Image (cartoon, rainbow, N blue to C red; front, top):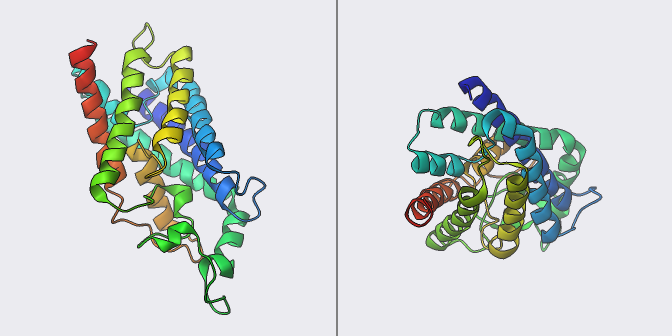
Length: 264
């Protein structure tokens, strides 16, 4: 795979991942969405199908890492680091593009949601009006959860551990079954299994932090949230942003170590 193929494949694949994954979060969260309040099951399966679609699309070009934690794990496993920066660049750019496309697709819903006095407060709002959960968290705005993750209980050690554990499960599943005979990415069955693993992680381990398990998935959309001209959008919660970046990278490294000791 050439550097250009890797960059283009990771950009396209990660953009699709975030468009569909962030899209289901928007669909469940925003006013005037037909899927509003569809719940956690919709979100977890939406992200699983997002992974499946993104992997199928990008695997022929880049091997469909779509996640810096996977890239780091494969580099540790194989001892090949030369393409890591290219993978990282494509993943971050793709995540930002995908997040921007979610904003375009739900433009009217974002406006309706963020100008609703019961959600964001403001002149004339009831003093006891219920705000979005994200708005109750220090430094987070009322639609930040469409773009990036946040904890239900803020405990840095627990939040970091949760992201590490979830990523170890994901990356071990990829390393143990995820490379096709050509050694250049997830095969057809591997893509499906990985998508189902993502659903399983979301259902079982997603409750505490929203399961980023992917630094690009969280950081790229968080940057876009900070840049977009959204009314009353609130903060981007940069105080928490390091956890969904560092945790998955540690988890990917641990998974690679486990693989090299137990399976290689």
